[in-house]
Image 1 (tube, rainbow, N blue to C red):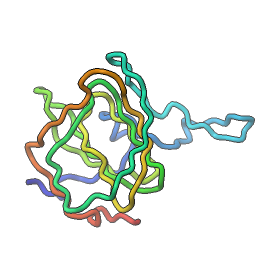
Image 2: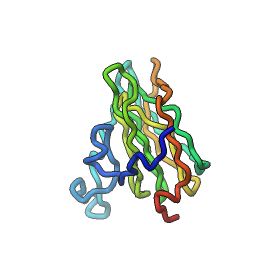
Image 3: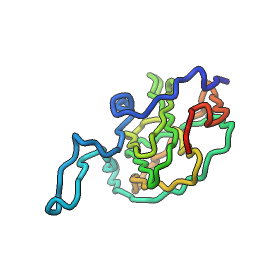
Image 4: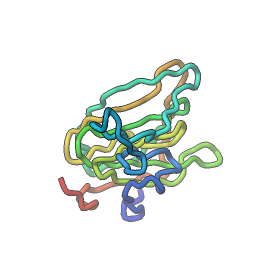
Length: 174
């Protein structure tokens, strides 16, 4: 098994997360005023891609319970036919675990990102990721996903299991 000390827990930034998808957050560079100046619109924050195989967008709410630690990361999943966006509906941090794809179509080395609580993510189609890892509080997420026919969930065993002993190692404030 690999300890989390061998992996760097990274702050979630658009540049570092770009190989896996989009960081969804209110950025001044994407903002403009609408509705006679009464509202600020943060525009085009993620590339939602669900059209493969006559897919259609689904809007869901997931309610994630806090994760029990220690947590062993032993499986990872991907959705080859569509992107998948997770946007927290509260100001609660969560972990994002992703991996690139190797030449033989298996998950590559893991990267672990920490959302600041105001950020969501949009995984590109086919990006390997771990299911939600909610930290200190039950958290609801707005999830934009793909509906339609076709096999849209692949699951793979990780060759090196990772154990996260405790969220305290992340110096989280609740």
